[in-house]
Length: 95
Image (tube, rainbow, N blue to C red; front, side):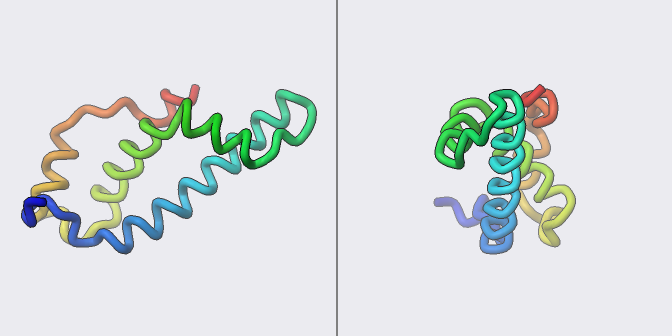
């Protein structure tokens, strides 16, 4: 891997992304359960989220993390690459 493109804040990113991902799956579970009229369960919600929203969530979370939380963003080529890409906002992906 090219060290210039490695995330210098990787440990923080992974820890916070995991927490945000679990919250997003829990929220999706709530919506699915409300629609179904009963608790759909964690496994079903996780599968549903991965199949329908994971790519949009990951792209949105990475760009948001780099933009708002990473102290290295001004000198980071990885951030510049993400900044140059046009990702569909996560909110419109789940709508």
